[in-house]
Image (cartoon, chains in turn cyan, blue):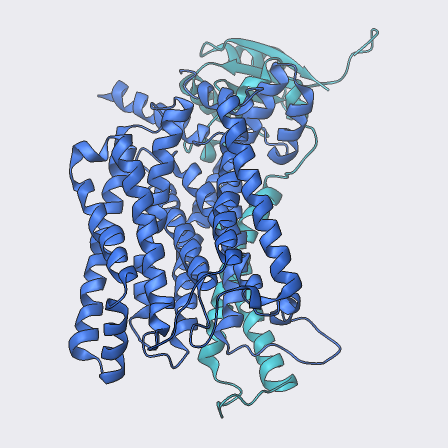
Amino acid sequence: MSGRQVAPLLGLVAEFDDDAPLLRTLRDARAAGWRGLDAFGPHPLPEAAPLLGVRATPVGIVAASVGVAAAAAQYGVQYWLGVQDYPLNVGGRPPHAWPVFLPAAYIVGVLWAAAAALVGMLLLNRLPRLHHPIFNARGFGRASEDRWFLFLPAADAGFDPVAAELLLRAHGPLRVTELRG
Amino acid sequence: MSLSTAPLARAALRRHGGTSYRLAVAAAAFGVVVLAWAVAVLLVRGIGVWGNNQPFVWGFDLIAYAWWIGVANAASLFAAVLVLRRHGLRTAVNRFAEAAALAAVLVASLYPVLHLGRPLLAHWVFPLPMTTGVWPYFGSTLVWDFWGIVSHLVVTSLFWFIGLIPDLATLRDRAAREGRLGVARAYGLFALGWRGSLAHWHRHQAAHRLVAALVLPLLLSAQTVVALEFVATPVPAWHQPRLPLQVLLTGLPAGLGVVLALAAVLRGGLGIERHIDDADMDLLARLLAAAGAGCAALYAYDALSGLVLGDAATRAAYAARLSHPAWWGGLALGALLPQLLWWRRLRLSARSVVPIGLLASAGVWLDRWSLVVDGLDRAGAAYRPSLNEWALLGGGLALFCLCLLLFARHVPVVSMFEIRHEENEREREEAEA
């Protein structure tokens, strides 16, 4: 950034060296009515998910429904091609001998369910993404190693910088910085 | 919180692999060149360059295919079970087991094309709209195998990649801190912009466990479909209802043996005994011993049906297999040798687990030889593998080794985020106690 022009304030970021103070601050922020918060850390923290209002169920629903649809489509394709479009007489077997259509339907169902689990997870997380303002936060590179970060958005309706900073400083963060971008 | 995963990240980010690493890569790359030569000769001159004949319509090709699938299966099984054990410790070592599975399934996936007889017509098993208007016959086990191997390859890759995303982000950030922007960009490309949001972690964990769970049904289908290809023929040694279960279970020592040997080599070679610790080696070695015991039980059932229960053709086929050394080699190396690992002292020494693991894997290869070649045995006929077949076998091994060497050099061989998570949970439990 150059000159006197200052980028708009996006919010405040607190950095912690452990997950316990982060969780306490996150609980306080939820109790104080903050919305649109986000927390970052180097490993999963199951306790944080309800505080952030995230459920993993949609990933499973996406994977299961895509898997079932793919299995049905595979069965349907085999039926159409093998029974309707090009029936082959192999040793007098009936064209629609349904058990022989099951292995491929099952395998292809699993294949697409797995693909949907990855793609669904990425889409729900709005990834992949080239850049995100949080990467501008000071020292954020260590969020993937040993530091924890909590972000309070300035876009929140009741954003008050002083109250926000007091909240973030309550449980001993390493530092609190402004995030601009 | 400790920086305990730093050695893993440093191992992946080091600038030079060292002389022994370079020599190993050069040797493996030479083997891959031999593989490419063997494949080129095969494609140009056709399957006549192999030692196959009547009655030995199958040989090294199908042995290698079934064996590599077995290696991939057992390695995937081990990795998936570790990921699914949610609250237990020691999930982090699934990473290199997955890598071994991926490399094995990659090598295996060459074979269905190469052993088709007419490799240039491999696309005929795809349901592609062609001008001939002919569709594949979907009742054929060969067509199931096409779906099976494609799914196995894709799902194993996805399982490996999903677990890798956060670790790639760690490498991206570390490389950026070291000022190596090119390296940071390369890792960042595959990290997909991962920023460690706890909301993202939650969905990531769900997806990772879900795909781990999806690997399991696929393992059942991969080996059974290979076995059903045998069962669908009228060859007495193959036309047996026990074959799917047998191929599935006797495949386990192949992959567990390779993963065990790999674990011993990695922990010594990279100096990460803290991350692949004695408890991991202990668990793996006992699993291999148990898989060997399962094999021994199947050999016993095989003997029961081949000597007592079966009809005359089955008994004759069984006697023919017994008259060749491969059957005994499979029994000794695949089933009996791993039983040594019930001794704790042998389990925990790299000097014993590496040879036992690799020999157990070789024993499964002999078991496949016994099934494929000796199962087709007829008086007066002989099968001698040609140079091209040996080159394909050795080249396949080299390709497997090259994949693993590149893996061990460029990504963390043990899942870093799972180690952090485990340490965190352990610290919490200690604090509560």
